[in-house]
Amino acid sequence: MLNVYKETGFVQGAGRHQCSHLQRCQKLLHLATCNERQHGRLQKLTVHAHSPQQAPKPVDPTPKRGHRSQQLASKQAGPVKQPQSGGRNLSRLNKRMAELGLCSRREADDWIAQGLVRVDGQVATMGLQVSQHARIEVGEQAHSQQAQLVTVLLHKPVGYVSGQAEDGHAPAVSLLSERTHWRGDTSRLRFNPSQLRGLAPAGRLDLDSNGLLVLTQDGRVARQLIGAESSVTKEYLVRVTWGDVVRNVQGVFPASKLSKLRHGLSLDGKMLKPATVEWQNPEQLRFVLSEGRKRQIRRMCDLVGLKVVGLKRIRIGRVLLGSLPPG
Image (tube, rainbow, N blue to C red; front, top):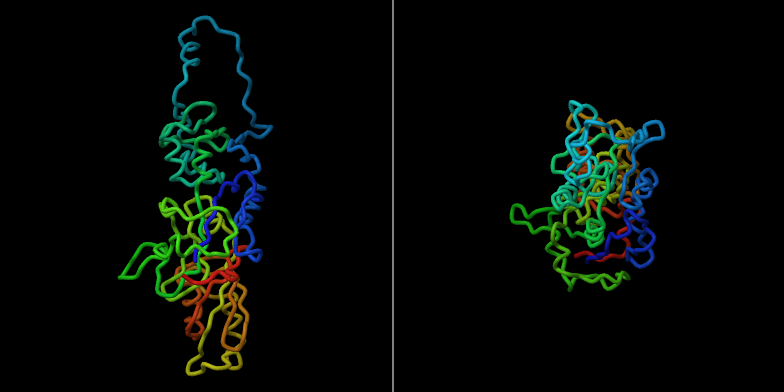
């Protein structure tokens, strides 16, 4: 079943739009709380990054003799010129906009191409390099476009892939239709085929796993959930066996190996972050992870001799799977 709603409040405040799941599901936009506090200056989609010590010096309005051609040129509105600083401490404008939480890089490129972005008061050009202290302004038209982006919560069944179709298996997005829109959704937004364009998973579930899957058109949501600096946790219920033991696995599984699952394992030559791992019942473990490596839980269990026979994601950040039915 799908639950779909607009992301209009992501930058300007998360209190106006409900994620349904009746009253058991928290607002997805609350995942951005920490980022919004850090970048509170983004409220009007304008970034003023000058610190008091680095504020630009006022320009002397007094005309200087012999520079009339320069004065006339400065009055003409046009694209901002590339800074002449040898590339030091500069980054591409689309990357900087994504870092500040304004939009995704792809959105930034679209806005720049449409002339909707200004840097230090001048229209930006594609590929522009900017400093950390550049003033970036985004037009209202871009804001309106962003307000139409949607995020969908889906209870993915086993047998569907999270992204593009592969090896004959259908993608999870193929489950979304007016017929599958959950009746328990309390939002006012209703399904429209246009909501399927550009919808991508923000944190995958593999073919043999089920549970909560977030599909979004909004790069800001994806960045909050799966970006390199994301600290959003994901919770899973994992049914396991230990050799020939399928009942009361907890009674025979060594405590030292459980400790290894919590911290001390490496994948692909890189140490995993500490995780919460505890017994939910004698045959099922509860994992809480703050990172998302490919097939991470299954590979972690393999390293300590456990076999995963069922894996279900029940929470992402403050969003619970709750009573959302599968499919």
